[in-house]
Image (cartoon, rainbow, N blue to C red; front, side, top):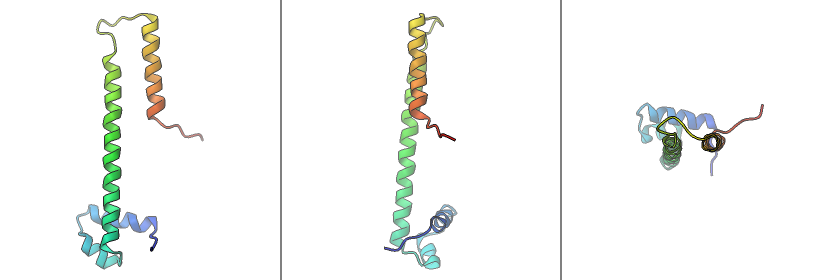
Length: 99
């Protein structure tokens, strides 16, 4: 199995995004059409999974916002519980990189 560099894949995706056909790219690069189609499929699956995750994250956020009191008042315990849920949501959804 032949290995291709990241730069090669990026160039193939750039050409696909610009509207070139798989056959033209395969002929120009010598990369098999099957390989290009596998790369394109894998990228589409990654994008779909990313979109699904984003939708789920927004649903969680919207649910939490809906829990805010309609009258603008709550007890200290209710407020603390909501704030803790919000902080937990951020901790879950946002990765922190140590510098």
